[in-house]
Image 1 (cartoon, one colour):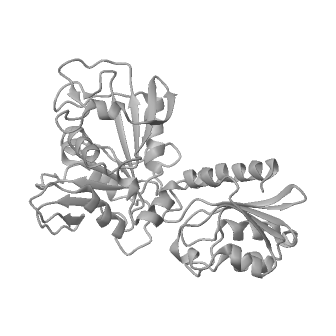
Image 2 (image 1 turned 120 degrees about the horizontal axis):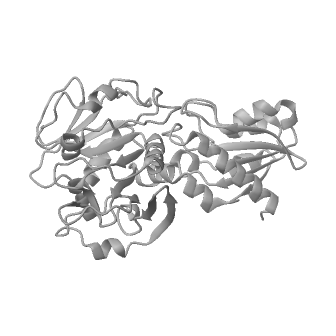
Amino acid sequence: MSTAFDEKIMRQLLALSMSEQGRTLPNPMVAAAVVQEGVIIATGVHQKSGEAHAEVLALAAAGNLSKGATVYVTLEPCTHMGKTPPCVDALIQAGVREVVFAMEDPNPQVQERSAEEALSNAGILVRKGICREEAREYNRVFVTNMTHNRPYITLKSAISKDMKIAEAPQKLTQITGPVANEDVHKLRRSCDGILVGIGTILIDNPRLNCRLTETESSQDNPRPIIIDPDLRLSEDALFWTIARRQVRPRTNDEPSSKPIIVTRNKHNSKQATVITWDSPDPISFEWIWKQLYSLGFCHILIEGGQGVTTELLSQGEWDEWVVYQSNQVLGPHGVDLIESSSVSWESISAMPVFKKEPMGTEMKTIYRNSLGVRKR
């Protein structure tokens, strides 16, 4: 049974874990606290795969005060040897009295031997499920990775009041203002891959990087992924310059700075990793997600134009759709967000809204896909 104090501490830790959003991939975001007699003695936040876990950091910061303490942690402590030793061992060795965690770890390696069993056998009290659903929401990317063996997919769209994405075909049009733009770059920072179609590259020539003041030259740039069936990509595209800089480090052997090109044509490239779709059928996003997951991608942000957005919605291969809508009207000659022959506006308007909030002069709406890819 949880108390108001338990929930207060756990919510504080969940918010604290968000400080490393995107940077811990492929690991989850986790925060922990050592508590003695209702007072937080020390906290720890996991920062990067291969580095110390939150529980270990909190125990180290608390030192001898860990003995007889209660440790709160947002995720079930690990029980297996990975890049770091099992956290349950550190908790046992520290002599803690009780461990309280929010959500069970969906990692199959942890499920083979639960933390509850390991800690209880050592005489440590265990309580679980405090703010469980909130914790799963915070770590929905990790949960999706572990349970579906694929990346979490976020689609982002910027549209006018009359549902247009451009003033005219082939014309670059600024839809959103500075507040929404900053929010988009925060979204980019949380992802390890950013996907667009060749049409977006040819029309907008985007940089596809994260441009926040404190991170513009850091390792927070997601890795570009370009769908280019006929290899029309030019070496002069702006994103190549950004891609040559160091992007977010990967944990597998795949070169971390190389963009991904998805194409129908077999092609050798020193600049990019090429994934070839060897079929006359339309490129399957489900197949793309499998390929990208095998390369270590955990969270893909899609900033496609009409073609990619329409196909993605039609195939149902997405988890979250973030829509920024402005008050400007682009008129009858503007480019529609979707090709209505493939996806109906009725089906879009029927989607349940997960969250809606003002974003400067725009409105930000988040949809969750409860019928498509998330059920597989």
